[in-house]
Each structure stands twice: as structure tokens, then as C-alpha cells.
Image (cartoon, rainbow, N blue to C red):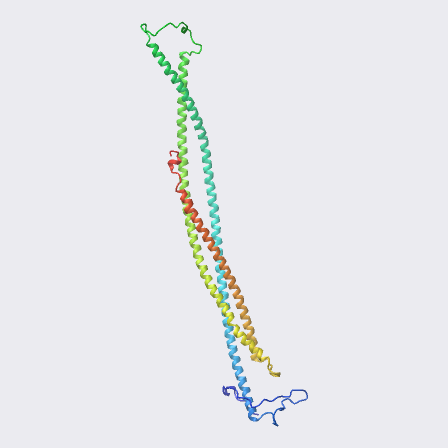
Length: 395
């Protein structure tokens, strides 16, 4: 029996062309392999038999080498795909972690803003209540001042009438004092010697004037005390309003600084999100290219399996090459499925980043509008706040 040569001794060259094709009778009751073509009495010549063996060795050797090459490529591809999948998963996990951090940060910021706004609202409501109470406190002095002013006017009229009567009486008595026996404008008035029923006595006359002066002095003293009280109230109110104005101005300035700081932070995070969006788009493009790059190996492996399915008879064997090809297709299928899954996750991450970008841009626009309202409108109006003299009623 001839010893089989080692596969490595077969030279790597093109297979020689067969001299003839022999049809095999494979029917029932037939000896397989009988020559049915030509006029030979044997199936093959010795040279053809050796050449056929060499061809089979070469084919087996080439098939093994190709199988080893395919398996090496499949292994490298599997490792590359696994590495890519692991990197993509890490990127997605990192992106989700950043998303959680950003969400927690903005949730905390919003909670802080809500608490600050609630505290500011309570402080403003307390100041409004103080203003209302201050206005209520001025109503009583205002009513007292109004009543006192009316009493002053009434007593002024009484004193003016008394003064007018005194002036007229003084002129009459002065005129009477100038009469003498040589006066030419004197005459008889017989009815003037009787007393008028409405005439006052010297006591009632003096008491009437004394009472008028006393009431006038009393009203003047009350009016002076009231003026002092009003001055104190106006001074306290004006000082309180000015202090409150300064407090509100400081609160507006602090609020504008907080808004500016928050806007800068939002713009910083928006910049990072935009950079991450660019990186994620590049990652998605790389995943799509990786999926596309596996189409050719998949076609090659499936085509090999398809062509090998036409091997005749017992040659249709589940050999190592067949199992390797099946394993390669399965690994490629799993790799493509993993890449597509990672692609979907990356696309979802990109959509989340786009939503975050829109939210950040909207929030930045809101912050800019808030800064414009507080700084350009509210603070501009507050520059026209009344001065202390005007609040005290002197202007």
C-alpha cells in the first residue's frame, strides 16, 4: 500500500486539467464506478490515479488552509466585534451616567430655585403686609389731623369774629372818649339810657374772650403735638421705605447675579451636550459602518455554505470546515444583532441628548428673558423711586 505524502510536500500550483471525465453508474444492481465512456477496460490509468490523489491532497490541504484562515478571520472579527460592543456599551453606560448626573443637577437646581422663589415670595408678602399696616397706621393720624384742622379753622373764625367785635368796640369807645362839651357832633338820644337785654356784663364779656383764647391755645397745643406725631410717623415711614427699597435693590442685584451664574452654567452644559452629540453622531456612523462591513463576510460565509451544499453523495459531510462556516455565520449574526442593538441604544442616547439640548436652549432663553426683565425693566423703574424728602411729604 502506497504511503500518503505529507500535505506540505504538495507544491502550491494550479490543478492540472483532467484528461477525461468518467461517468459513474450509481443505479441499483450496478457496480459503482464502471467506465461508461471511451474504450478503456479500466477506470483510470495509474498516472491519472496518482494525479487524482495528488489533486485530492492539494484540495484537502488548500481547504484546511482556507478553513484555518477563515477561522482566524472569524476569531479576529469576533474579538473585534466583542471589543466594539464592549466599548459601545461602556460609551452608552457613560452617556447614561452623564445623563443621570445632568438630570440630578438640574433637578437640584430647580428645587433650589423653587425654594428661593418661595422664600422670596414670603418675604415680599411680609413687606406688603408691613406697607398695608403702615398705611393703616396713617389713617388715624390723618383723621385726627383733619378733625383738628377743622377745629382750628372753627376757633380761628370765632377768634376773628371776637377780634372784629373788639376792633369795632375799640373804635366806638375811642370815638366816645373824644366827645366833650365843645363837640359839634353831639345830640340828644333819650332812648339810649336803657340797657339792652342782650348786653353782657363786664364779667361775661371778659369770660367770653378768655374762653376763646383758652380754646384757641388748647387747639394750638394739640395741633403742635399732632404735627410732631405726624413728623415722626412720616420720618419713620420714609426711613422704612428707603431701607426696604435698598433691601429690594440688593435682592434684585443678587437675583441678577444668580441668573447670570445659572445662565453661564447652562451654556457650559449646552456646550458639553453639543460636543457629546457630535461624538455620538460619529459613534452611530461608526456602528453603521461596522454593520455594513460585516455584510461581505456574511455573504462569503453563506455563499460557501450554499456552494458546499451541492457536494455529491457522501462528500456532503459535516466536516470541520462546514462546522467552522456555520459557527462563523452564527457569530456574524450575533455580532450584527449586537451592533444593531447598540446602534438603537446609541440613537436613543442621541435623541435624549437632542431633548436635553432643546431643554437647555429653552432654559437659557428663559434665563435671558428673566435677566432682561429684572435688570432692564424692574431695576430701571426702581431708579425713579421717591427720595426721602418726597416720602416725608416735603416735595
